[in-house]
Amino acid sequence: MNPVDTDEGTPVSVKIRERIQAARKRFHANDNIAEFIQPGELELLLDEVQEKMKGVLGSLVIDTEHDHNTDKTARRVAKMYLKEVFQGRYVPQPAITEFPNAEHLNELMIVGPITVRSACSHHLVPVIGKLWIGVLPNEHTNVIGLSKYARLAEWIMGRPQIQEEAVVQLADLIQRKTQPDGLAIVMEATHFCVGWRGVRDLDSKMINSVMRGSFLKDANLRREFLSLIAQKG
Ligand SMILES: [Zn+2]
Image (cartoon, rainbow, N blue to C red; front, side, top):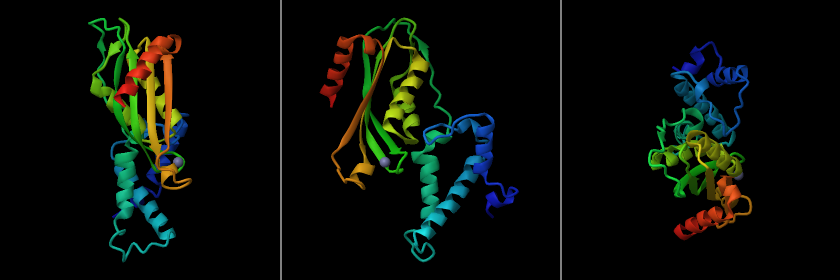
């Protein structure tokens, strides 16, 4: 029995969307909507996406009934989107414990390279790369564990993204959590929508950065950060 059909015929995606709209929140591809999803609804959403995906395969004129390679593809793709590659839209932010800066750390700290696995909002094909985070703390800065930076990045990147927006979202999140004097993020990624389709250039990479606070004001600090990450490749 398909649970979507038993619920008065209203698709669960419609119910979730109505809640978001009632709250006047945005639900672009790179927004997180976890707060609007009730317990159990993600499973219903999985069924709904599976059905729609089956429709896409049908419209691509693929015989999913007789082709054993694709008979479970609709379910696999639905699961991949909702529970793996776009999970950062549907699950709440990973819990991060912030500690006071007891040691009064005030030296440049660099985390990276952190592996980036994302997808472009335009084509939904992979964007794979790495990023570095530079933090200049002060005595009021909160400290978070090194591994937490990677978890926050994974949550932000696990959505259909636009690289320029992704680094800004990540910077805003880290800024809010830790309140450093300066924050820098550099991301370098290969966009498969350029390598796999389009101009089919497999080697082209996109690099972009966000600089905040002391990284904006202090050219030496900026240079130190950029030269340190260049050495680590
Ligand atoms: Zn693209």
